[in-house]
Length: 205
Image (cartoon, rainbow, N blue to C red; front, side):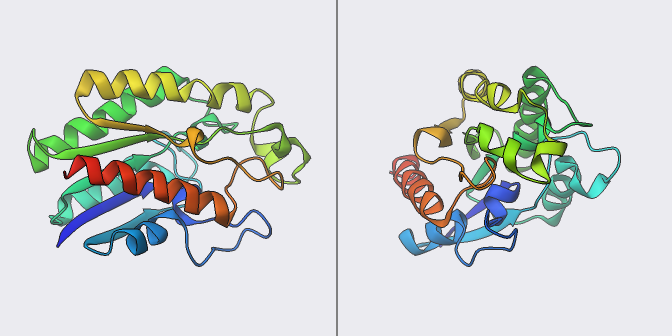
């Protein structure tokens, strides 16, 4: 049985837009039901950034990523979907910084798992103006967050070509909830999982 590691933020964890609880079946779990021949490791965390998070190092994505590298897991495919939280007030990374951080993830993974290790880079769904109506997210995200989130896809695709990894644009298959403009509803998780499953089939074909 091949193993897939899904590394991401709250949209991998399964943050429910309605009340912030964890939904029963975020996209990695749905992925497991679609591809029962694979073992899925869910590694999503709310608030996770690609690198910079001075006030809470636990949410700095490089910290947990380093722990996973040290753990010596038997992983056949790494999936990374990060970036949304890099736009947070107080983090405020430019897209080029996010891209270079992700490049470092790819290189460190290959240093551990080999140059031919399989990696799927996913650019996140787009933030929408609905976040401006949310009590919390309207404060922690800047007003230009939607426009900034739209810059991820072309930048990630370029990175994927440069580093010879697989790429998928989540925004082509799923969208944020109109409840908070940041997170996906369960149905969107299903749509994204289906797209990822189809991509995985081609990767291991």
